[in-house]
Image 1 (cartoon, helix red, strand yellow):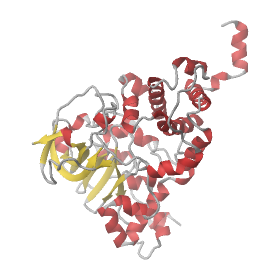
Image 2 (tube, rainbow over the protein chains, first blue to last red; image 1 turned 120 degrees about the vertical axis):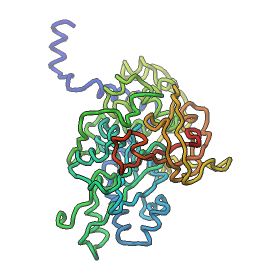
Image 3 (cartoon, rainbow over the protein chains, first blue to last red; image 1 turned 30 degrees about the vertical axis):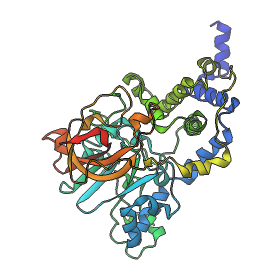
Image 4 (tube, rainbow over the protein chains, first blue to last red; image 1 turned 180 degrees about the vertical axis):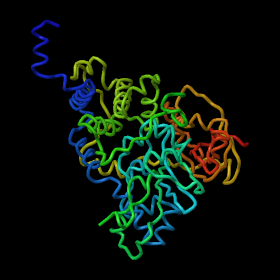
Length: 210
Length: 219
């Protein structure tokens, strides 16, 4: 590169665009101009998972299960149609199984092979769920994983890890916090955290929500 | 394929690091890479198992040096290149240099909601009765195929219990190579922690995988 070109490069600060960014742009341009993709459809896909489909959906499912014993029975028996009653269905949630935590049993979900996750109820997975430390450790030392998340599971509570190796997607049904008798579903949903539905956390306690 | 993607039980000294108030995407290019990948399955005609294999079938150093959506991008490029939808000189040039190939369908904005709602159910009609029943003891076979499989290495050779019979589902080992869906019975098989990890393991731990019938034998 000549001295002139070198300066030119810096003047326009191309270095701010990483190789990956340039590659994605190039690919989108080529695929769009060839008529294989429509950028407006891409925008909708992004908008769907940034604003519409996320863990609030799963929180509503859990809250209903806490409030309505008949719904809970349907959810545990066959989760996919029960969850569809709330309008959540489809991609990466075609076959859902609900896992009931009890005072003696804690469930945790992982995908050691990739990133399988129940999109219709939890949205897209967080980075840690797809990371090597979680995928390697969850099946071998799940109590250590829980310590990474800041809590200690009592040693006499059994722990059960579900590795999502097929197209079955798992949703943990956490224990309902004490002191929430008579709460509405909407209020209960505020207690349900994303991590409590993966099994790496617990629901909030009543005093944590206003 | 025994690749770096098969991470269960691998010693990894870093702790799991949750990110408070994590955004769905961490950069604009991640948004686009995600959406392009989802949208391209329609004109590309590939299935989820082909997508997974395209991401995973790479040297460990390559797999481990890429971020999650960089792996998606690499998988997408490979599938598009293999089918001649894109050529490498076009990626280098950043613009089309060759005529488009005819494709059966593309994802239009009006089709997005229906496509996501439809998803891709994998359960199929059974062609034969299930070989195993709930409560039966089985062993995960010791296999090391060079092709796609969803039997994690940490389970191979170990015995567990059939806990659920999940129906007959598309078999990834066939579907990934284009050999057809070849549906097989799928089971939840659970293992004691000590069976997988030895005497030092937590005695109150059980781990399950979902395993297709060809992965299993009577123990």
